[in-house]
Image (cartoon, rainbow, N blue to C red; front, side):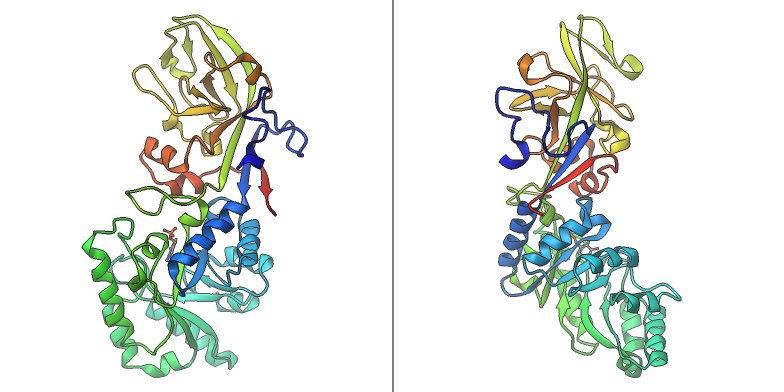
Length: 388
Ligand SMILES: *Cc1c(COP(=O)(O)O)cnc(C)c1O
């Protein structure tokens, strides 16, 4: 990430000037080269299965248009999104791509799929009947995926639904089933017996349906090994540098760098307090930098500090700068007493997510998962893409 952090490790303050971001209160940098590298790593793991990319929720907060373009350049041909509007963004970025919409088909929505050439992932009998009726009416057996529920109880066909379908194959003949999917509940815990149980159920249930390419694995599922790969894997979080598996090292490259900017620096005495609720009392003469990122930007309030409760830390170059006091809506305060003065001045950019502070470190600190940290990233940031 040297290109993203240039200036932060040297002898002068990192102000991010000269790249169009000068004066931006906070900068979110997306390193597309890392995204592409992560895609190649996962594709290699998939050993011959097609590696599709899950780009729902604006590509996990990184920006769907740019992420899709980069992944398509890397050879990715199939994209999964949650909603039809998201599919529209993917279509504009990748005119040739195959696009599946995971949330399925709402009443009256079929024509919208045709408009942008997206395929619904059908997960209930009413959805299947709607798609079949639309295909009959328009005279074209259009493509869709079928979703089998093997243990999530969220989306997908249950055994009894599949038995209904098996007794009424004409219904499935009215359209083309281009893919059959299911979703793993516990793939992040490789030893969980539920993984094997779901794989077995998937095989039993899809055997009752017309033959079609199959897909079971999310990021963590890819790492469960070849018996989980089928014809296609669906990589999400690992593409964006997040941890897919609970234990062990995370081999993925970080994709996101978040920097906030110092608005003011002040010296305060021991015994003074910082921020809302006077939650933190200074125990030494302290140099405080106020940085323009807050909980409205997805920097969780739980990351704040108080007496007896350490918060998150920012980094100024290689120097750790712990949070002082609570996170405000638009601001945080950090302790820069131990940072050389020339490195931290008004206008300096400080690292909040990046080489020193991982997405999953932040997640662990607030008791959530990297997925939520990424998708919570705010809308106020100046976004810059490296490697467009
Ligand atoms: C989100 C999602 C994925 C991707 O999961 P990751 O854990 O992010 O890799 C795959 N399949 C389905 C059905 C999903 O909803």
